[in-house]
Image (cartoon, rainbow, N blue to C red; front, side, top):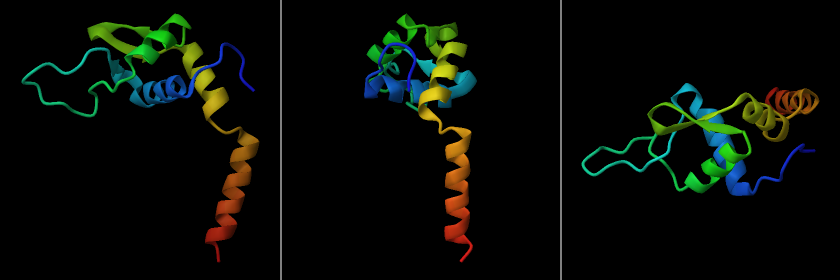
Length: 100
């Protein structure tokens, strides 16, 4: 179960993208005219990033980018990553299916 305020699905997705972005962070602003957009260009998740920052799960830092906080990583691990017990079950099931 979760501990803390409820996160809408879009904000949970934004937290996961923030987790995946690692040290690069997520851009807060859209790519300017004449610039080549890349995988780091912002998606339409700015409201969710702002919400995550208000909850202490993210922080806006250098170059106006958002980064996941320790609290955000803990929430991500707790809610979006399977428990070690569940991981073992999945690995066992996977190994049985693919060992035939």
